[in-house]
Picture 1 (cartoon, rainbow, N blue to C red):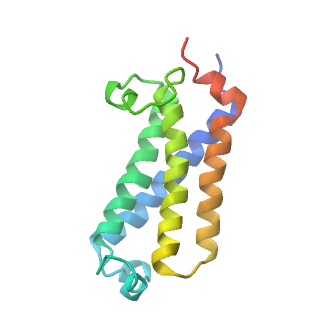
Picture 2 (picture 1 turned 90 degrees about the vertical axis):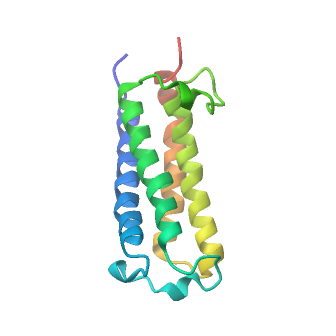
Picture 3 (picture 1 turned 180 degrees about the vertical axis):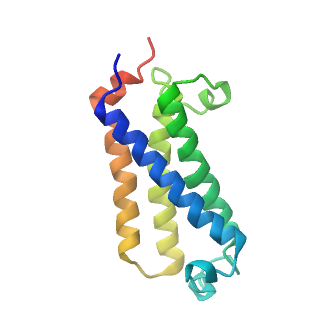
Length: 150
């Protein structure tokens, strides 16, 4: 089966999410003060964190490396037994399910961030929308069919 355009769009969404989070998470991990990206530590006053190290590591891992791995798996459709253990949709390739997980992770990340930061910006709306668009593309019938296990 030829890869549908909607699958290519989903892969692009995952790649861009991953690359952006690696950039942001990497900078926050490298400089936990937030100065490199203009985020004052005072944003964390209502959070359990004193600097951006832990949030940077979480961002780097779950919204950086994970979506890049998902994009790779969406392209290659490689088997990966450890990932199958958390695949709740056993009739679909694990990467398809994890694409849904990445959409949820993005929305949860922003919701938690809004709770702790207590102020919203355009970037929050963009990333909530991004997570929803990932989920919408993931559940499109032709995307589901492409990742259906025979």
